[in-house]
Length: 475
Ligand SMILES: *[C@@H]1O[C@H](CO)[C@@H](O)[C@H](O)[C@H]1NC(C)=O
Ligand SMILES: *[C@@H]1O[C@H](CO)[C@@H](O)[C@H](O)[C@H]1NC(C)=O
Ligand SMILES: *[C@@H]1O[C@H](CO)[C@@H](O)[C@H](O)[C@H]1NC(C)=O
Ligand SMILES: *[C@@H]1O[C@H](CO)[C@@H](O)[C@H](O)[C@H]1NC(C)=O
Ligand SMILES: *[C@@H]1O[C@H](CO)[C@@H](O)[C@H](O)[C@H]1NC(C)=O
Image 1: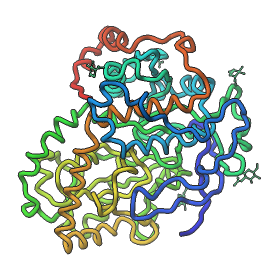
Image 2: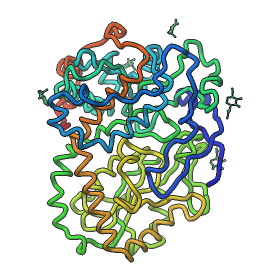
Image 3: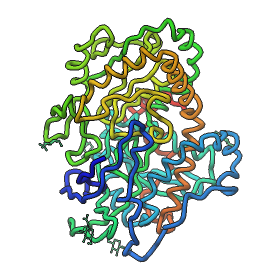
Image 4: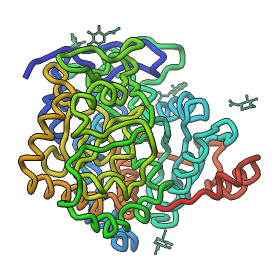
């Protein structure tokens, strides 16, 4: 495995200057789980702040956290395998501590309407919106924010006073909008923080989002808002018996997929998300910030074997119709795409584009040739054309392919449930509390309002708010 210059973490809001530091590129195996952070982050030294040191602590577990009635009622211990991602996401913050100042700074810069963010928290078991929002200006993000507000209220009703006091920024943008302004350097993590703009406060910051790459190591992954808006358990998991009426042997051995025309966005310097065609052929443009992976796959790869691949932008096809095919294609959207969890429920074998972007459950649950097939793995050899070899393999190993398809469906049904996601949030809140270097207080947030008021009164009083309010939602 080559060593290569790589940014493990750095910079400011992405408009700012990006600075890089050298470190080994994490190993990439044909396995999602292996592509994890390495030495660059393992050995982050002491913080020179001296104020707080969370090293050696880990997310509290045990009787206190497991005591609430609903911890047992939701069967939270069953979802233990997914919680490893929480610890990975917190590893920086655990070493450096999250300060009140960095929280206020991030909230002011990132936790507002213009950045598709909202600043929320729990105090005394009640969910609060900590800084004002403006549903009108959020435009199409208003329903997404509402989905998360309802999730916060659901946590309030499920766990109440068992929730720790925390304040954080939650964002609905597809890809992260910031990188922690720490140059992560194993020998001296803070030494290279330059003088940024006046008033700059370094991270790590408390920020949650739906997807990231290792370029954004301290972002806290949370389940996608689409789970709520698409009523995932009811629409997909409860329909599994219906999907399974189409027997494996009756499904066509064709790779099928229908996509909307999104192009993948990335930060130029983020080596984890770079995509290329066969033999390293360049497909990204705009300074490598846009990679049209869907266009490229559909226009250049599918025509090489149209008998075995039916993947296109044209026509919407119901999920039930997807079960007519043995193999289902998944390509990134602007970042991660929530289509993946939908496809996993169908009982066909998901062919997932290898991607540096990941959601909260990818690293802990997904495995190549265990519960899905990964393709477009190596940029410098055959790039996306390895999909043809994977199709050959699946055709030659039909029983194994059927088992993997069933396993993909099983992990979705077992772990991606509303209960599992609620438990994940609960555990994440306790993890976050354990890395704060200050004692959170509602008094830090003079504009705070209970989220229930924001949803039940403000949203409904906003022109067009009723329509947003009436949209279906489930945990
Ligand atoms: C890490 O920091 C030390 C001390 O400031 C510096 O000498 C070294 O060059 C840095 N390493 C990298 C890879 O930037
Ligand atoms: C927090 O930030 C304020 C100004 O933004 C500064 O005066 C204060 O010293 C900072 N506190 C700490 C502990 O860094
Ligand atoms: C929200 O929209 C209104 C009307 O378009 C505009 O006047 C106002 O400045 C916007 N506020 C923010 C915070 O963008
Ligand atoms: C358990 O969660 C449900 C759903 O949020 C809630 O209605 C109920 O009050 C909770 N029970 C307890 C004992 O907290
Ligand atoms: C885009 O990335 C490729 C591969 O890393 C690199 O060779 C090329 O110089 C980059 N282009 C720009 C404009 O940064």
